[in-house]
Length: 66
Image 1 (cartoon, rainbow, N blue to C red):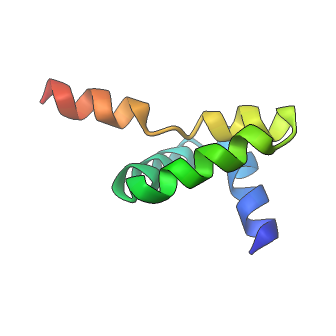
Image 2: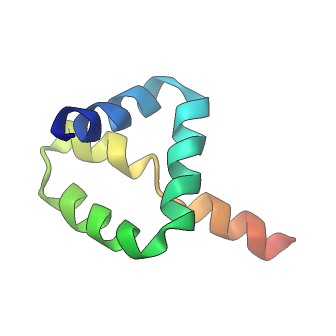
């Protein structure tokens, strides 16, 4: 599970489809998103940058427009 958790943000950096999937999951399970943000703050810089790309903020803005 640890390797999957570390590998998904790296995969999302290169794949738009994976990034959108992770954004959707983080938006849908917003309670767990706070835990993910807490963990991202403690990761090394290169992993933190890739993890921030999967923030669900974009989806929240799109839903407000609709």
